[in-house]
Length: 135
Image (cartoon, rainbow, N blue to C red; front, side, top):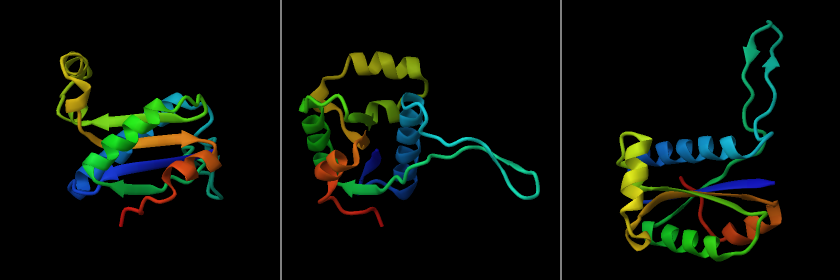
């Protein structure tokens, strides 16, 4: 399995990092076994489990992310999981506020700060192989 995150290239670095963190937490809550078990080092210190697959972070413009997100939602493939983090969520202080605002927002006016794509490695590579890395 593979996970790729795509963030808006025009966002400030702090918002890019926050977007990746939000998407990572969202994915981990959906995919059982995505994080490894807790481990103990030689000195007996406990280390919490971390994700057990790499997560490349790629970058596109805001418009390209929206196009990619819409394209991915149209794909009828239950092996591909897509999670979006949008401006409505980012500007909401509480989840209830986000829920209310989102219900009143037309899809074509939602801007995505980033998306997370998870699925079989070959399929994810095919969907994202031509997108540049965030640097």
